[in-house]
Amino acid sequence: MGYYGYGYGGFNMSYIALIVVSLVLGLITQAYIKKTYAKWSKVPVSSGETGADVARRMLSSEGAGSVGITSVAGHLTDFYDPRDNQLHLSQENLSGGSVASVAVACHEAGHAVQTAKGYIPVKIRTALVPVVNFTSQAWMIVFVIGIAMNFAGLTTLAIILFAFSVLFQLVTLPVEIDASKRAVAYIGANAGLDAVAERGAKQVLTAAALTYVAAALVSILQLVYIISRSDRN
Image (cartoon, rainbow, N blue to C red; front, side, top):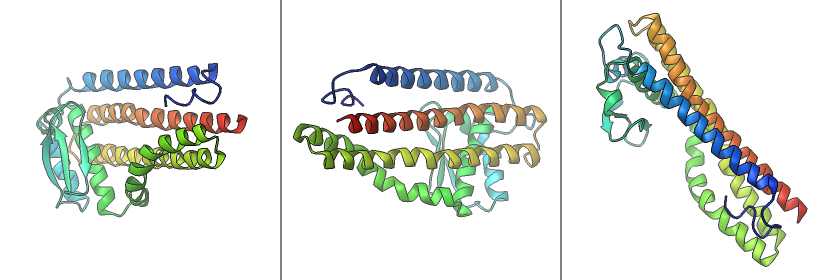
C-alpha cells in the first residue's frame, strides 16, 4: 500500500485516512476476537468432549468422515486444508474442552463439509487462489512501472490485477459465514451440548467473521482509492 501516495501527487489526507481506517479496523477486530475467545475458553462444554471430539462427530454426521484431524503450532492458527484433507487445529482447540475450542474446531469442520458437498463459493475461492497468488505480487510492480513510464494502460492493468484480491476477499465472506453457520447449527442440534455452548459458539464465530468483514472493507477502500488517484492523473 506504500506507493499509493507516491508519484500520484504525494501524500494526501485521503491516503492518510485510508491508513488510519485500516489500522483501526484491524486492531478493533483482532482485540474483539481475542477477548471473546478468551472469555469462552474458560467455559467448559457440558459433554466433557474436546474440540477434536465434537469436530470428528460433526464430520462423520455430515458426510466428511474421511477428513483427518491433526495439530498445528500457534494460537488461533486453525485451518482446513483440502490438499491433505485434514483439519489442522491448534493444541488448545484440538485437545481443549472449552466452548471456544469446540466452536473453532467445528468451524473448520464446516469448511471440510463445504468441500465434501461441493459448496459453490468454495469452488470459486479455490479457483481464485492461484490467480490471487500471482496478482497480489504483480499488481504493485505493474503499478509502479506505469507511474514511472506515465503509461495509463499499465496503471489500469494494475488496478485490474488488484481487483482480483478484492474479489477474493468478497468470495471469502460467504465461505466463512457459511462454515460458522454449519458449526453453530451442529452444536445446537446434534452435539449433545447445552444452550450455553451454542450461545458461546455464536459469539466466538461472529467475532471471527468480523475480521473477514473488516479485511474485505479495507480492500474495497484501497481499490476505490487507487481508482480515484488514477482518474485524477
